[in-house]
Image (cartoon, each protein chain N blue to C red):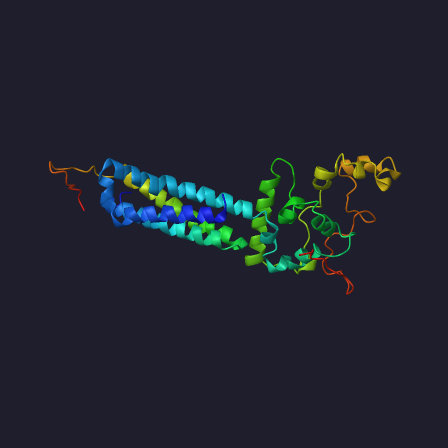
Length: 77
Length: 209
């Protein structure tokens, strides 16, 4: 499977997933109820896990950056 | 790690990840790639591990167990002003850590005791939220209470080893140690939480401020 996104977009997607997972984790840590543990694992852990895996996928499937002599990136969007 | 420190770590990780989301171009440089690896791989997993550890530790607290309404009478039973109530006597006299009273007595001290206790807790959650929870007075243990939990502290203690009743019959002490005669057998330390059977004259002790 190859998702036709640029590396920047993949990083954004994985970052958003990770942020959502971390925010759920932060809420669960402040929420002192037994269900918080389940929410942390099922939703927070899953989002963080998917975000991290998507980040790794974006690395192995990335098209290398080509830099011109001026140093500017010409990454295909 | 205290909860507030864990929350700070988690929010900090999220904020750093936000930098990559807002400005993914920073990952073009070598330093940016290192930052991306840190905030999208290492920090999230580290934060998750610390958060899970924090939740595991919190799940051992008395307040955590008693946060379900169904457990409220059991929490109240810890304050009964009657030393024949074994949990109350242990809780009020700090024979068990007051902050981990439930966990201390309801965890098997064998190698996988903690894991079994956590899985049991998940089962409680399932029944509480998705099943049909019983009335508090109808709650039963999954397995008979093991003497090993009591003996974890009392084994070798003079009051246990030389107790008059324990030594009245030479077969009693070995039977207790072999878990063949339950500590909470009828006629022994049989008064435990007894939720639903307190009577109207029961008194409570909530300590001195």
